[in-house]
Image (cartoon, rainbow, N blue to C red; front, side):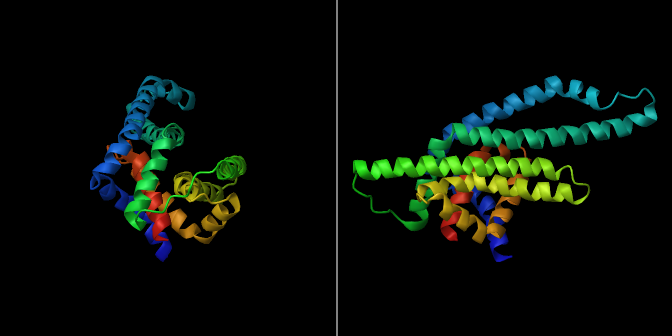
Length: 238
C-alpha cells in the first residue's frame, strides 16, 4: 500500500509543484490553453446535444411525480458524459501538447535529480534513438489498443465487469502520463513494461487520483501539466 499511497499523493503534490515553480508554469501555459479550449468545446457540445441524447434514452414524463427521477437520471447522465468526455480530451490534449510535456518532464527531472550530463551528438546515436522510438511507439499503440478492447469487453460481464473495466481505465490513465518520463529516460518497450508491472500499485493509485482531479472544476483545466508533473514525480521518487 505504500506505493499506492505514493502514486495517489504525487498527483496532488503536482498542483503545488506547478504553482511554486515559475519555469514550469511558463512551460505549462500552452497545454493549459489547449485544455481550456478543448474543455469549453466539450461543454458547448454537451449543452447543445444533451437534450437530444437524453431523448434517445428516455422520454420526459408528463406526470410531476416522475419528474424527480427524470432529473436525477439526467444529472447522473450529464456527469457520466462529462467524465468520459474529459477523459477523452485528456488523451487528445496529451497528443497535441506532447512536446511541452516532455520539456516539463525534463524540468522536473532536473529539479528532482539535478542537471544531467549531456551526451555528445552523433548520427549513429541519433539513428539508434529514432529506431528505438519507432519500435517502442509501435508496440505501445498495440498494447493500448488491446487494453481499450479489454475495457469494452469487460463491460459486457455482469457485476464484476464494471469493476474490471474501471480498474483498467485507471491503469490506462496513469500509463498515458507515465509515458513522458519513460520516454525521457529513453527506456526500450520491454523496460517500460517491466517498470509498470513492478509498480502497478503506484500506477493504480496515480490513476485513481487523476480521475478524481478530472471531475473537480477549475483544477481539471490544469489537468495536463498536473498529470505530467505528477507522473514525473512518481517515476523519479520510485
